[in-house]
Image (cartoon, rainbow, N blue to C red):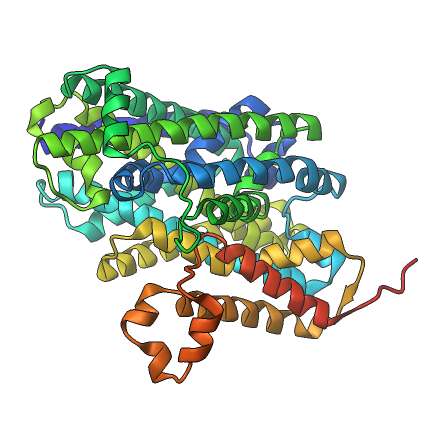
Length: 502
């Protein structure tokens, strides 16, 4: 199938999103943009959140990683399950009881302005970089397999896609995204299922036969029992639990949709439904990864892991059978992770940094400010995507998890300290703790990495004895976020005192 025809499907899909956005954004105001007037349907929110949480990175990196990591990613998903329980029955009741628009307002009520600004700032940093990393990966795939053939430069591709996203989120915000995410999640899951069926048939077998072949190759192994490995099952489960708590429960983008549901009970139903669907979908992605690697072995295809799915789906062997589905599913995975990020960053900056919700300015002036911030974040996304292009890092999913472990740690520590203790904090030193803790966590992570030993950095720095006695070959994995949160919690404990309130 020609690149021009594939691109026409991308344009047609975008036009459909614009129609949905126009219809849903009629009569929208700032409250519609920020929390959907608290009238969102919980079933639509639950289904649409699948697309937001998975993104284009999951779509290509999880299947691509099966060849070297088997089904170890399911360990992380099991951790997600535990984390979502905490979100549903600890965090959501807190947010609804305080009637929050931005979840970081809680930090101001609990600790003061500095905690509020610190929490919001770390969210903005993490979400902006993480979302653009996901955006870069998908844009790069579209560029390599379609737009290079049409002679379109990467910078133009990035600008057009961000302009598309800006257009359909400009007015409606959350109110619109609830519906567009539902549409896009449907497109992504249909693409996933149909591509899986077609590739299984191409292997000359059925689902059970493909499963047996994957077992023979060792792809279906779920639990890694090597305690020193970064993918050791307890590290992945515990790390996955706290990643879910931080990247969903303490994330304005994800919670903005949850608190747009009218009642706490419906919001909890949304979270539980989302949790079950997400586990099933992640298993399907891993199954797809297994059969992709089987197909690649049969046909001597050797490409980087992130390029495996697009290389096979867009190959001449399928004559466009799954090429269109792959492209539609890929952009269906891309848009929810980026449109929600830009919208939530706009909300967070307007409410938490500018204090727009406390302003006495007119609704018209507030809206003008919000639109300027929205455009500003789109421009920032464009710049960051170009930076990722210059770096050209293929290990995007590893980078996202690592960066999240560093930037969400202070959020985890702040919220945990606020919920689990009644102590008050010296507001002047909050920023100090929130900066030092991530740096310490990053330093500890570097000292446990294989590169640390391969380059003999521990010897050069005179830390050989310390490094060996502490780590002894232990590699920090997804539990980095927990370590970071604990360091933040400890720092907050040091600068705190017992509350005078009875």
